Length: 173
Image 1 (spheres, rainbow, N blue to C red):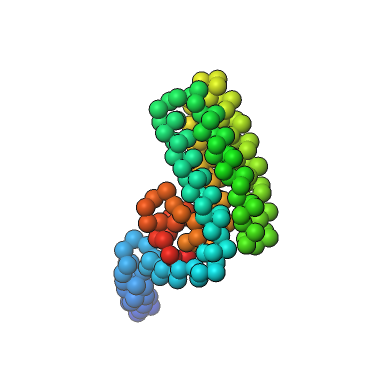
Image 2 (cartoon, one colour):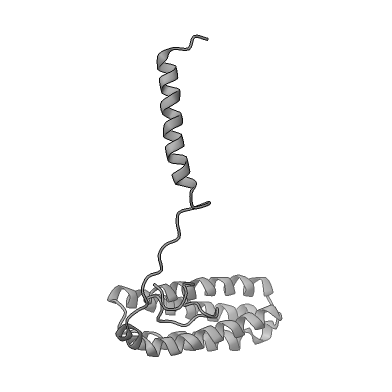
């Protein structure tokens, strides 16, 4: 194999290029540097969603009641927890007038999804179909997560102490 000046020059440039890129790419561990926390929402924003925040606290309580019922495999009691949760979610649109119009539209769609899931949970629970109940519960959790994302970060309470409904530390966007 004949080594030429071009081969040596190419190898040298590649090693400098990789050497210059690699340390920067991996300097912060496995991924990108953590994002700086966003400032807390202002008092007016928090106040405009106060009613929704109170209802969301009830939604989280209802979600936990459903979780407890499903974990205990009390299929015959699923309907009560599902319908209580559904009823709380139905109250959100009236308390969410400060949302952008597109988010209000999405919220209305998600409320309909929760309605349908509550009906399906009732039927699966009454039928003793635990696997279906668990599947529907997961779907319901996803829809609730989508609802939470419609709101400005920091205005809804969370089921996890010290975090907002979308998983960020309270007071941060």
